[in-house]
Image 1: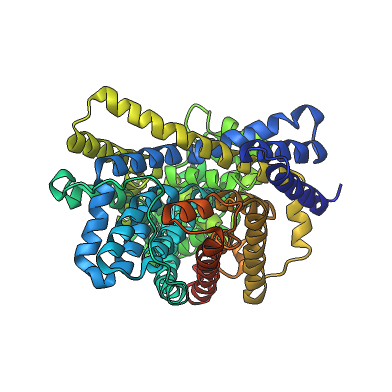
Image 2: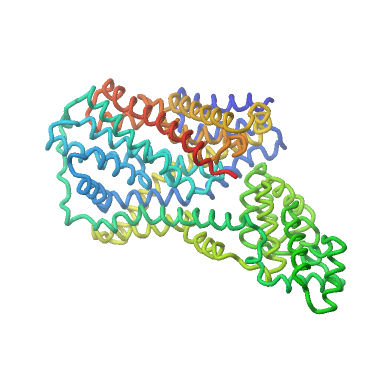
Length: 617
């Protein structure tokens, strides 16, 4: 069956099950994944198993982060830390700029906390402000949406952005940085839009029916500001630092061979000359045998004299640079049994994600389970390795060759200072560790502020994990759905219709935005819209070359699209309506208009930054 037809069947199945049959999003996505898998090519016996394999792969990638984010959000709310952050913004910006304070508070808090929880927290403050000023109620409540809504859809570790980062192989730190870059100006424009909406719909605040509003806690009952901010800021700093130092280290590798990275060219020449006279095997032998005959002869003559002059060293440097720039040489039999360095192994692991699901899991199981992690093997292992290296770009192949060179000449090749720093931040900036540290701080803040026992803390944590578990199931099911589209061969079909470059890139961004809008309008959930749309476009095999910019901008376009099309089938619509005490018509004229404007504004900034800062090449 044609892969594009399978794509249409899959999307229709998801929407139909959610909209008409009222099926939970997890069941709908898993059901669609199984349907596509059955109709896609492959052995019959593996059609159901590969869905489970893809589901488990996504869980392993983002499950811990989502669970810890749920714990952090719950602890921030219960401890009063979130309240402290909001009051700090109000104090700094003042009551005259209360709308900006509410937007800023919503933006910051929605990074680790789900949107509905943030709105529950902030709407009492908006109501309190109206009591004092007797004006701008709609401005206050909609300003919360301007900040919280855009952060929730663009910045990890909220589920939608986190899932998109995993599907498009985007570094989470990069996703955070670009999410903030696009989100902040969008939220700022959003406040101006809120003021326009407030001008035309200046609705006074209405009391809750039969409910008394609780008095806010006194300042002395709240945790200090630095401790309140730490669970939010710490993971952002650690993850972003890992991204930045990794980019710097990669940039340093672009000049792959220079005198500063080789401790002693003379010693390297000595090793090569010694191998030339021995019946040796191994990586050094490979480099010697691939040198031109005149250079080999010069090495032998220089070894007899016991000195390697500058001209010979320059010749060796030139030839080694040539080999590094060629095809990956670790596929040669000379490298059998060699354990690759951690950077090389990470590079191969990332590339393995592009393989079909069965091959990717087989590669990790076979390749990483050798006696030494990352050991190069013969037979089927080498065939899988060849498949993985074929997925690397030319620059990635050069980097892989350089890391392999480091293994072969460990005594002569020096790691740059940037690499040493990057190796440290790779640990501290791992999203799982960063969020775990943040969760510990958030739990400590809760215990310190409310005097909870360990038993009470355990119950609070369990409650948070239960809510996070549903999100994990939905996102992993979306991953399985996308994997089955890839198994159906949709990438090959799409490549026939999509070109490359800036013009094609803008069309792809607009198409992704439109698809996200359509799915959001049809079934209501922004998170499901992001998951489904990202699964589709990841399965299509969209590359940075096709897009003309980094894939992070594709994720931004999808996130912005998931904001548009909010109406009565969206839970946020009713949260805004009931908590703000607005009628359905008033909510359509405020919430729906605002979220649509935010989505389109975010798309405009996405396209602008994609042109100004493409982050490719």
